[in-house]
Image (cartoon, rainbow, N blue to C red; front, side):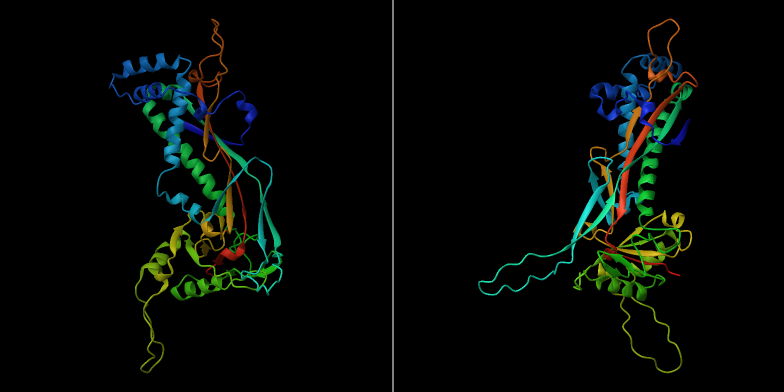
Length: 384
């Protein structure tokens, strides 16, 4: 049906093209295009081919078809409750104006308590330290080729497959880039974010351990995260909201977060000591997230490492992923044909394909970047 060529995005190769999304297309014409593509009128195979050939020769059909693909792409890209997008809950989503390096300033070092002001005394300013994180967005893209024969013989297949492939490629790219800001092949996480001690804003912080995922170890790690302090030594009162695990730990994590009771095994002889049996972890309000990319990136502890994250919507951003402003979703463009009819008439319709192969080429572009930020708002246990 189609062939996907992943490549570096070279805008010079696509000069003079406008995003399918930005074309001013009449909605009625767009609806008629969809009806033709899916053969809503149930024409015979030959009649359908003739109608398609007639449409392909018109100047606006390629752009109509491009916008159909673009809209299908966006619909698939924004599928609700897609587990590939779980990472957007525990990562801060930002917006950047261009491809230059952007700075994220964090004021730290200030005392969270208001100081006493004596009678007729002066209100003194905070003297915080500035911490800076930087990153730049980059382009990612792929070329999707549809053969002229495929359009003529199986238009519905091309209509359905290409937008889904584009959406999946964009989602995979974004989730993989985000996971790379968290995990690392060493098993100890991104060195810019995790450490048995790591320095941030001049303060030594510990947010890396080796405990396996159990009820007791999760309780311990929650307390370790809640005990993190500002550079002035004040408790930050961080409450982790997300437990993020690889697929191998999914059912262990679900059992921990949903079990009402703890099971205790008595060691040694004697009557034993009464202990509480209620599992209080579910009361902490943790939400479980599964990251399928962790085992791929972390080749050391990818199946045993687990993470806690604070809620980035409440100011606790351990990671930020940013999109180019005005380009927050993948964009589709079409390659103009480089064929010229022997009888004259200028360049051929893009839907007649290119000179070399008759391929009809669409391209998807996604612009994304990111950085590790405040290590106090996350904790990693390698589990080994």
